[in-house]
Image 1 (cartoon, rainbow, N blue to C red):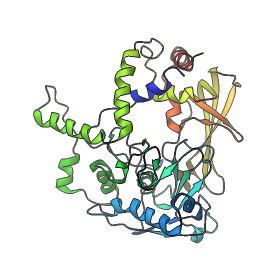
Image 2 (cartoon, one colour; image 1 turned 135 degrees about the horizontal axis):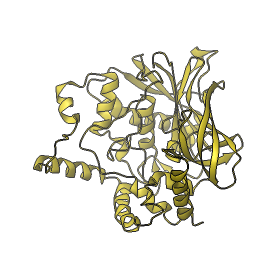
Image 3 (spheres, rainbow, N blue to C red; image 1 turned 45 degrees about the horizontal axis):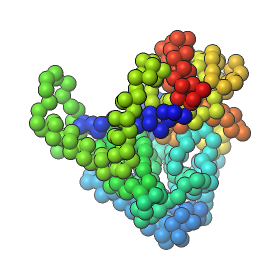
Image 4 (tube, helix red, strand yellow; image 1 turned 90 degrees about the vertical axis):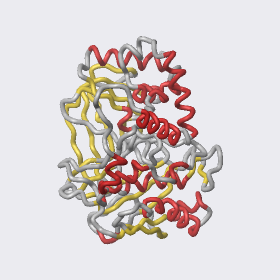
Length: 393
Protein backbone atom coordinates (compact mmCIF):
# COMPACT_ATOMS: atom_id res chain seq x y z
CA UNK A 1 0.00 0.00 0.00
CA UNK A 2 3.04 2.25 0.19
CA UNK A 3 2.47 4.26 -2.96
CA UNK A 4 -1.22 3.54 -3.53
CA UNK A 5 -2.62 6.99 -2.75
CA UNK A 6 0.36 8.91 -4.10
CA UNK A 7 0.56 7.09 -7.42
CA UNK A 8 -3.02 7.92 -8.27
CA UNK A 9 -1.94 11.53 -8.61
CA UNK A 10 0.58 10.62 -11.29
CA UNK A 11 -2.18 9.58 -13.67
CA UNK A 12 -3.50 13.14 -13.75
CA UNK A 13 -2.19 15.22 -16.64
CA UNK A 14 -2.16 18.95 -17.06
CA UNK A 15 -5.28 20.14 -18.91
CA UNK A 16 -5.11 20.06 -22.66
CA UNK A 17 -5.35 23.24 -24.71
CA UNK A 18 -7.08 21.29 -27.48
CA UNK A 19 -10.26 19.30 -27.77
CA UNK A 20 -10.07 15.94 -26.08
CA UNK A 21 -13.67 14.73 -26.01
CA UNK A 22 -14.25 11.07 -26.80
CA UNK A 23 -17.36 9.49 -28.28
CA UNK A 24 -18.69 5.97 -27.81
CA UNK A 25 -18.76 3.96 -31.04
CA UNK A 26 -20.11 0.53 -31.89
CA UNK A 27 -17.78 -2.31 -32.82
CA UNK A 28 -18.49 -1.38 -36.45
CA UNK A 29 -17.53 2.27 -35.86
CA UNK A 30 -20.98 3.87 -35.69
CA UNK A 31 -21.39 6.76 -33.23
CA UNK A 32 -23.68 5.80 -30.33
CA UNK A 33 -26.44 8.43 -30.06
CA UNK A 34 -30.13 9.04 -29.60
CA UNK A 35 -32.10 9.26 -32.84
CA UNK A 36 -35.26 10.56 -31.19
CA UNK A 37 -35.53 14.26 -30.42
CA UNK A 38 -37.28 13.61 -27.10
CA UNK A 39 -35.32 11.98 -24.27
CA UNK A 40 -36.91 11.40 -20.86
CA UNK A 41 -35.01 10.45 -17.71
CA UNK A 42 -37.13 9.25 -14.80
CA UNK A 43 -36.22 9.06 -11.12
CA UNK A 44 -37.06 5.76 -9.44
CA UNK A 45 -38.37 5.76 -5.83
CA UNK A 46 -34.97 4.56 -4.58
CA UNK A 47 -33.52 7.99 -5.40
CA UNK A 48 -35.95 9.77 -3.07
CA UNK A 49 -34.02 8.60 -0.03
CA UNK A 50 -31.04 10.61 -1.24
CA UNK A 51 -32.94 13.76 -2.08
CA UNK A 52 -35.79 13.96 0.42
CA UNK A 53 -38.70 13.06 -1.82
CA UNK A 54 -40.04 12.67 -5.35
CA UNK A 55 -40.32 16.39 -6.05
CA UNK A 56 -36.76 16.95 -4.85
CA UNK A 57 -35.53 14.09 -7.04
CA UNK A 58 -37.17 15.61 -10.09
CA UNK A 59 -35.72 19.05 -9.28
CA UNK A 60 -32.29 17.45 -8.97
CA UNK A 61 -32.66 15.80 -12.37
CA UNK A 62 -33.79 19.10 -13.88
CA UNK A 63 -30.63 20.70 -12.53
CA UNK A 64 -28.44 17.93 -13.95
CA UNK A 65 -30.12 18.11 -17.37
CA UNK A 66 -30.04 21.92 -17.54
CA UNK A 67 -26.43 22.43 -18.73
CA UNK A 68 -26.88 19.90 -21.54
CA UNK A 69 -30.15 21.54 -22.59
CA UNK A 70 -28.46 24.96 -22.58
CA UNK A 71 -25.94 24.03 -25.28
CA UNK A 72 -26.54 26.29 -28.25
CA UNK A 73 -27.43 24.21 -31.28
CA UNK A 74 -28.78 21.20 -29.40
CA UNK A 75 -31.60 19.44 -31.28
CA UNK A 76 -32.56 17.35 -28.24
CA UNK A 77 -35.47 18.00 -25.90
CA UNK A 78 -34.66 16.36 -22.57
CA UNK A 79 -36.95 16.26 -19.58
CA UNK A 80 -37.19 14.63 -16.18
CA UNK A 81 -39.98 12.73 -14.49
CA UNK A 82 -40.81 10.13 -11.85
CA UNK A 83 -41.68 6.45 -12.10
CA UNK A 84 -42.33 3.40 -9.96
CA UNK A 85 -40.07 1.26 -12.16
CA UNK A 86 -36.61 0.34 -10.94
CA UNK A 87 -35.40 -2.44 -13.30
CA UNK A 88 -32.00 -1.62 -14.79
CA UNK A 89 -31.25 -2.75 -18.33
CA UNK A 90 -33.39 -3.42 -21.38
CA UNK A 91 -36.31 -5.78 -21.96
CA UNK A 92 -36.06 -7.00 -25.56
CA UNK A 93 -39.33 -8.93 -25.35
CA UNK A 94 -41.39 -5.89 -24.35
CA UNK A 95 -39.41 -2.88 -25.66
CA UNK A 96 -42.38 -0.55 -25.26
CA UNK A 97 -42.15 -0.92 -21.47
CA UNK A 98 -38.54 0.30 -21.20
CA UNK A 99 -37.85 3.63 -19.54
CA UNK A 100 -34.57 5.45 -18.99
CA UNK A 101 -34.13 5.58 -15.23
CA UNK A 102 -32.05 6.95 -12.40
CA UNK A 103 -31.84 4.26 -9.71
CA UNK A 104 -30.07 4.14 -6.35
CA UNK A 105 -28.68 0.78 -5.21
CA UNK A 106 -26.62 -0.40 -2.27
CA UNK A 107 -23.84 -1.85 -4.42
CA UNK A 108 -23.18 -1.65 -8.15
CA UNK A 109 -23.67 -4.83 -10.19
CA UNK A 110 -20.68 -7.15 -10.49
CA UNK A 111 -18.70 -6.67 -13.68
CA UNK A 112 -18.84 -2.87 -13.89
CA UNK A 113 -16.16 -0.37 -12.81
CA UNK A 114 -16.36 0.42 -9.11
CA UNK A 115 -17.23 4.05 -8.46
CA UNK A 116 -20.03 6.35 -7.38
CA UNK A 117 -22.28 5.58 -10.35
CA UNK A 118 -22.44 3.91 -13.74
CA UNK A 119 -24.75 4.24 -16.73
CA UNK A 120 -26.07 1.23 -18.65
CA UNK A 121 -26.55 2.37 -22.25
CA UNK A 122 -28.43 0.01 -24.58
CA UNK A 123 -28.00 0.58 -28.32
CA UNK A 124 -28.47 -1.03 -31.72
CA UNK A 125 -25.06 -2.27 -32.95
CA UNK A 126 -25.89 -1.85 -36.63
CA UNK A 127 -26.75 1.86 -36.34
CA UNK A 128 -25.54 3.05 -32.92
CA UNK A 129 -29.02 4.23 -31.98
CA UNK A 130 -29.53 4.44 -28.22
CA UNK A 131 -32.80 2.86 -27.10
CA UNK A 132 -32.36 3.05 -23.31
CA UNK A 133 -30.02 4.52 -20.69
CA UNK A 134 -30.16 3.78 -16.96
CA UNK A 135 -28.08 5.64 -14.39
CA UNK A 136 -27.23 3.54 -11.33
CA UNK A 137 -26.01 5.38 -8.21
CA UNK A 138 -24.15 3.49 -5.48
CA UNK A 139 -25.11 4.28 -1.87
CA UNK A 140 -22.98 1.80 0.11
CA UNK A 141 -20.25 3.67 1.98
CA UNK A 142 -21.03 6.94 0.20
CA UNK A 143 -22.50 10.16 1.56
CA UNK A 144 -24.15 12.52 -0.93
CA UNK A 145 -25.29 16.10 -0.74
CA UNK A 146 -27.60 18.13 -2.96
CA UNK A 147 -26.24 21.44 -1.68
CA UNK A 148 -22.50 21.10 -2.19
CA UNK A 149 -21.84 20.24 1.44
CA UNK A 150 -18.18 19.72 2.27
CA UNK A 151 -17.14 16.15 2.97
CA UNK A 152 -19.92 14.71 0.76
CA UNK A 153 -20.19 14.00 -2.93
CA UNK A 154 -22.39 16.39 -4.87
CA UNK A 155 -25.19 14.29 -6.35
CA UNK A 156 -26.08 16.83 -9.04
CA UNK A 157 -22.49 16.84 -10.34
CA UNK A 158 -22.49 13.04 -10.39
CA UNK A 159 -25.75 12.96 -12.38
CA UNK A 160 -24.60 15.66 -14.81
CA UNK A 161 -21.58 13.48 -15.57
CA UNK A 162 -23.66 10.31 -15.97
CA UNK A 163 -26.11 12.08 -18.29
CA UNK A 164 -23.12 12.77 -20.51
CA UNK A 165 -22.64 9.00 -20.78
CA UNK A 166 -26.37 8.55 -21.43
CA UNK A 167 -25.92 10.92 -24.39
CA UNK A 168 -22.98 8.96 -25.83
CA UNK A 169 -19.91 10.69 -24.36
CA UNK A 170 -16.98 8.67 -23.04
CA UNK A 171 -14.73 9.72 -20.15
CA UNK A 172 -12.31 12.55 -20.89
CA UNK A 173 -9.17 11.98 -18.77
CA UNK A 174 -7.09 14.62 -20.59
CA UNK A 175 -9.22 17.65 -19.66
CA UNK A 176 -9.34 18.12 -15.90
CA UNK A 177 -11.98 20.86 -16.03
CA UNK A 178 -14.39 18.74 -18.08
CA UNK A 179 -17.56 17.39 -16.49
CA UNK A 180 -16.69 14.12 -18.27
CA UNK A 181 -13.38 13.87 -16.40
CA UNK A 182 -13.60 10.46 -14.68
CA UNK A 183 -13.07 11.60 -11.08
CA UNK A 184 -14.79 13.93 -8.61
CA UNK A 185 -13.84 15.12 -5.15
CA UNK A 186 -15.99 15.54 -2.07
CA UNK A 187 -17.68 18.92 -1.84
CA UNK A 188 -16.93 19.61 -5.50
CA UNK A 189 -19.73 21.22 -7.52
CA UNK A 190 -17.77 22.26 -10.62
CA UNK A 191 -19.17 19.25 -12.46
CA UNK A 192 -22.58 20.94 -12.53
CA UNK A 193 -21.21 23.31 -15.18
CA UNK A 194 -20.03 22.02 -18.54
CA UNK A 195 -16.58 22.76 -19.87
CA UNK A 196 -16.09 23.82 -23.49
CA UNK A 197 -14.81 20.31 -24.20
CA UNK A 198 -18.06 18.75 -22.94
CA UNK A 199 -20.07 21.03 -25.21
CA UNK A 200 -17.83 20.26 -28.18
CA UNK A 201 -18.32 16.53 -27.68
CA UNK A 202 -22.09 16.94 -27.46
CA UNK A 203 -22.17 19.04 -30.65
CA UNK A 204 -19.98 16.53 -32.45
CA UNK A 205 -22.75 13.98 -31.86
CA UNK A 206 -25.91 16.05 -32.11
CA UNK A 207 -25.15 19.33 -33.86
CA UNK A 208 -22.86 21.28 -36.14
CA UNK A 209 -20.05 22.95 -34.23
CA UNK A 210 -19.57 25.73 -36.77
CA UNK A 211 -16.59 28.01 -37.36
CA UNK A 212 -16.60 29.62 -33.92
CA UNK A 213 -16.53 26.26 -32.17
CA UNK A 214 -13.84 25.00 -34.55
CA UNK A 215 -11.55 27.79 -33.41
CA UNK A 216 -12.14 26.97 -29.75
CA UNK A 217 -11.69 23.23 -30.13
CA UNK A 218 -9.17 22.96 -32.95
CA UNK A 219 -6.06 20.82 -32.51
CA UNK A 220 -2.88 22.31 -31.10
CA UNK A 221 0.18 22.97 -33.26
CA UNK A 222 2.78 20.22 -33.61
CA UNK A 223 5.45 22.55 -34.98
CA UNK A 224 8.69 22.69 -32.94
CA UNK A 225 9.77 25.80 -31.09
CA UNK A 226 9.01 27.71 -27.94
CA UNK A 227 5.33 28.29 -27.13
CA UNK A 228 3.94 31.74 -27.78
CA UNK A 229 2.52 33.98 -25.10
CA UNK A 230 -1.02 33.20 -26.23
CA UNK A 231 -0.43 29.46 -25.85
CA UNK A 232 1.10 29.96 -22.41
CA UNK A 233 -1.80 32.14 -21.36
CA UNK A 234 -4.24 29.56 -22.64
CA UNK A 235 -2.53 26.78 -20.72
CA UNK A 236 -2.51 28.83 -17.52
CA UNK A 237 -6.17 29.64 -18.01
CA UNK A 238 -7.04 25.96 -18.44
CA UNK A 239 -4.97 25.10 -15.38
CA UNK A 240 -6.81 27.74 -13.37
CA UNK A 241 -10.13 26.21 -14.42
CA UNK A 242 -8.93 22.75 -13.50
CA UNK A 243 -7.70 23.92 -10.09
CA UNK A 244 -11.24 24.94 -9.16
CA UNK A 245 -11.66 21.24 -8.34
CA UNK A 246 -10.45 20.48 -4.79
CA UNK A 247 -9.22 17.00 -5.66
CA UNK A 248 -7.22 18.41 -8.59
CA UNK A 249 -5.35 20.73 -6.22
CA UNK A 250 -4.53 17.74 -4.02
CA UNK A 251 -3.53 15.70 -7.06
CA UNK A 252 -1.15 18.38 -8.35
CA UNK A 253 0.55 18.37 -4.96
CA UNK A 254 0.75 14.59 -5.00
CA UNK A 255 2.40 14.70 -8.43
CA UNK A 256 5.34 16.63 -6.99
CA UNK A 257 5.53 14.33 -3.97
CA UNK A 258 5.38 11.23 -6.15
CA UNK A 259 7.97 12.64 -8.55
CA UNK A 260 10.49 12.51 -5.74
CA UNK A 261 9.63 8.85 -5.20
CA UNK A 262 9.47 7.95 -8.86
CA UNK A 263 13.12 6.88 -8.86
CA UNK A 264 12.01 3.57 -7.31
CA UNK A 265 13.13 1.03 -9.98
CA UNK A 266 10.05 -1.17 -9.62
CA UNK A 267 7.82 1.68 -10.76
CA UNK A 268 9.86 4.20 -12.72
CA UNK A 269 12.24 2.05 -14.74
CA UNK A 270 9.59 -0.45 -15.72
CA UNK A 271 7.12 2.27 -16.70
CA UNK A 272 4.09 0.70 -15.01
CA UNK A 273 1.16 3.16 -15.27
CA UNK A 274 0.07 4.60 -11.94
CA UNK A 275 -3.60 3.81 -12.52
CA UNK A 276 -2.81 0.12 -12.92
CA UNK A 277 -0.65 0.04 -9.79
CA UNK A 278 -3.43 1.79 -7.84
CA UNK A 279 -5.97 -0.80 -9.05
CA UNK A 280 -3.59 -3.65 -8.23
CA UNK A 281 -3.16 -2.47 -4.64
CA UNK A 282 -6.91 -3.00 -4.17
CA UNK A 283 -7.09 -6.30 -6.06
CA UNK A 284 -7.52 -9.83 -4.70
CA UNK A 285 -5.06 -11.11 -7.30
CA UNK A 286 -3.10 -9.83 -10.29
CA UNK A 287 -2.45 -12.08 -13.28
CA UNK A 288 -0.32 -11.87 -16.41
CA UNK A 289 -1.31 -13.94 -19.41
CA UNK A 290 -2.83 -14.18 -22.87
CA UNK A 291 -6.47 -13.69 -23.84
CA UNK A 292 -7.46 -16.90 -25.58
CA UNK A 293 -11.17 -16.36 -26.18
CA UNK A 294 -13.75 -13.57 -25.84
CA UNK A 295 -17.48 -14.30 -25.91
CA UNK A 296 -20.41 -11.92 -25.44
CA UNK A 297 -23.95 -13.02 -24.65
CA UNK A 298 -27.31 -11.47 -23.88
CA UNK A 299 -28.30 -12.15 -20.26
CA UNK A 300 -31.90 -10.90 -20.39
CA UNK A 301 -31.25 -7.28 -19.32
CA UNK A 302 -27.77 -6.49 -20.72
CA UNK A 303 -24.84 -7.98 -22.59
CA UNK A 304 -22.12 -9.72 -20.59
CA UNK A 305 -18.67 -10.50 -21.96
CA UNK A 306 -16.38 -13.27 -20.67
CA UNK A 307 -12.69 -13.31 -21.56
CA UNK A 308 -10.75 -16.54 -21.06
CA UNK A 309 -7.19 -15.71 -19.97
CA UNK A 310 -4.39 -18.25 -19.97
CA UNK A 311 -2.42 -17.32 -16.84
CA UNK A 312 1.39 -17.26 -17.10
CA UNK A 313 2.20 -15.82 -13.68
CA UNK A 314 0.41 -14.05 -10.87
CA UNK A 315 0.49 -12.26 -7.54
CA UNK A 316 -1.89 -14.36 -5.46
CA UNK A 317 -3.02 -17.89 -6.23
CA UNK A 318 -4.62 -18.29 -9.63
CA UNK A 319 -5.57 -21.30 -11.79
CA UNK A 320 -4.01 -21.95 -15.18
CA UNK A 321 -7.03 -20.39 -16.88
CA UNK A 322 -9.40 -17.69 -15.68
CA UNK A 323 -12.80 -16.54 -16.99
CA UNK A 324 -12.90 -12.77 -16.48
CA UNK A 325 -16.39 -11.27 -16.53
CA UNK A 326 -17.40 -7.75 -17.54
CA UNK A 327 -20.71 -6.11 -18.38
CA UNK A 328 -20.82 -4.67 -21.88
CA UNK A 329 -20.41 -5.75 -25.49
CA UNK A 330 -22.59 -6.69 -28.44
CA UNK A 331 -24.63 -9.87 -28.89
CA UNK A 332 -27.91 -10.99 -30.49
CA UNK A 333 -28.50 -7.60 -32.11
CA UNK A 334 -28.15 -5.65 -28.85
CA UNK A 335 -25.28 -3.59 -27.49
CA UNK A 336 -24.58 -2.67 -23.88
CA UNK A 337 -22.09 0.03 -22.97
CA UNK A 338 -20.83 0.96 -19.50
CA UNK A 339 -18.22 3.74 -19.60
CA UNK A 340 -14.84 2.71 -18.26
CA UNK A 341 -15.52 -1.02 -18.50
CA UNK A 342 -12.65 -3.29 -19.53
CA UNK A 343 -12.46 -4.62 -23.09
CA UNK A 344 -10.43 -7.63 -24.22
CA UNK A 345 -9.26 -8.87 -27.62
CA UNK A 346 -8.32 -12.47 -28.44
CA UNK A 347 -4.58 -12.95 -28.64
CA UNK A 348 -3.56 -9.87 -26.67
CA UNK A 349 -1.16 -10.17 -23.75
CA UNK A 350 -2.38 -8.48 -20.60
CA UNK A 351 -1.87 -7.87 -16.93
CA UNK A 352 -5.18 -7.73 -15.04
CA UNK A 353 -5.96 -6.66 -11.48
CA UNK A 354 -8.93 -8.78 -10.39
CA UNK A 355 -11.56 -8.78 -7.66
CA UNK A 356 -13.30 -11.99 -6.63
CA UNK A 357 -17.09 -12.09 -6.41
CA UNK A 358 -19.88 -14.66 -6.26
CA UNK A 359 -20.15 -14.77 -10.06
CA UNK A 360 -16.39 -15.08 -10.65
CA UNK A 361 -13.66 -12.49 -11.16
CA UNK A 362 -13.83 -9.01 -12.71
CA UNK A 363 -11.24 -6.28 -13.32
CA UNK A 364 -10.77 -3.81 -10.46
CA UNK A 365 -11.65 -0.28 -11.62
CA UNK A 366 -12.71 -1.51 -15.04
CA UNK A 367 -10.29 -0.56 -17.83
CA UNK A 368 -7.86 0.97 -15.31
CA UNK A 369 -7.28 -2.54 -13.98
CA UNK A 370 -6.16 -3.89 -17.36
CA UNK A 371 -2.73 -3.28 -18.89
CA UNK A 372 -1.82 -4.34 -22.44
CA UNK A 373 1.67 -5.86 -22.73
CA UNK A 374 4.08 -6.29 -25.61
CA UNK A 375 5.70 -9.29 -23.92
CA UNK A 376 4.01 -11.30 -21.16
CA UNK A 377 7.36 -12.73 -20.00
CA UNK A 378 9.91 -10.03 -19.21
CA UNK A 379 7.40 -7.17 -19.20
CA UNK A 380 4.96 -9.22 -17.13
CA UNK A 381 7.63 -9.86 -14.51
CA UNK A 382 8.31 -6.13 -14.31
CA UNK A 383 4.63 -5.37 -13.79
CA UNK A 384 4.29 -7.93 -11.01
CA UNK A 385 7.48 -6.64 -9.36
CA UNK A 386 5.99 -3.14 -9.24
CA UNK A 387 2.70 -4.52 -7.87
CA UNK A 388 4.49 -6.45 -5.12
CA UNK A 389 6.49 -3.38 -4.13
CA UNK A 390 3.46 -1.06 -4.05
CA UNK A 391 1.48 -3.61 -2.03
CA UNK A 392 4.23 -3.99 0.53
CA UNK A 393 4.86 -7.67 -0.25
